[in-house]
Image (cartoon, rainbow, N blue to C red; front, side):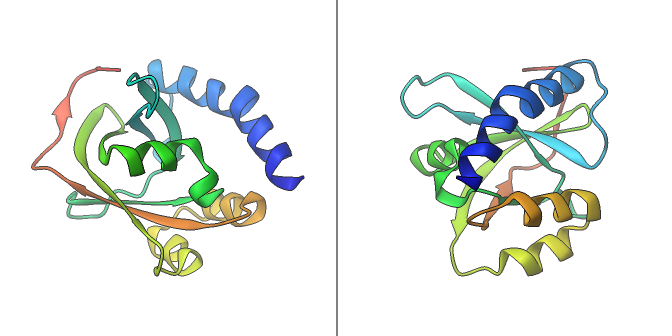
Length: 143
């Protein structure tokens, strides 16, 4: 029941508002957009996620609140090539689910206390995803 309520709220209210803000350059630095490829449609799918860009800008970390139940996780498992938008920069990379990683510890390492608290509070099946980024960002406003 908790998962259904959380997913419904995120899908109908939170995610559209965050995508709207991101398109206008109003996304806070604590968040990013993850672009996956729809496993059925083949179309790009945008999901707001916490900003898990590492200091060296070579890795992006995220903790999926709903684990393997999350549609974006299903998408990146089917097609691991993804893009991540942080600020105005797009990074391309390859995603990997890390089932053996401790997602609560990972949230603490990523930082972003508000996002981490929210993820722990509403998450039902936390799962760590690591994205190994290609060299350098693409700048500009794609997507």
